[in-house]
Amino acid sequence: MDLEQLDALLAGKIATLTLRPAGVALADAPPEGAILSGAFNPLHAGHLGMAAAAAQLTGLPASFELAVVNADKGALAAAEVVRRAAQFAGRHTLTLSREPLFAGKAALYPGRSFVLGYDTAARLLDPRYYGGERGLREALAAIAAHGCRLLVAGRIADGRFRTLADLPVPAAFSGSFVAISENLFRADISSSQLREQQRRA
Image (cartoon, rainbow, N blue to C red):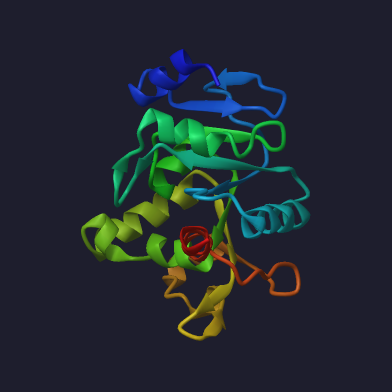
């Protein structure tokens, strides 16, 4: 990774930095196709499976996006960005951005499909991230206005497999959400579980 380009991203001088498997880094030139955004700490088979399911659903390639600013935890250090990005090197396309929220991502990547796990979709629909219900509806309206769709994969939560049908999607925005069927993708794995396993090893 070109550290000067990464510094430019962290400083807000460029909006995105796309890292191709061959090692090419492109400023403000995100790839076409579906996008799976995540923290990738670590990248695991569940992420790869969701991306493959999205590619099958859309008929377009899927790539990954890491926001260097987190809605809950603030900005990642440059060294941590480099560490997480290294997991994709030579294997998958990764775009880095400063945008933690999907309404902002929709403006960066208009017309795209975003791939979400159930837990991420639940946070997306949580009014507290937007200062209340009105802010949530404004965010969903922005996503819809940019022509973006949200592809939601299920996962185990509270002891059972939960899907898009279990989420409180406002009826006015239901057309923006598409379920990834359990037949197409299911992987009962999470980054937090993997980190705990690594800690105990």
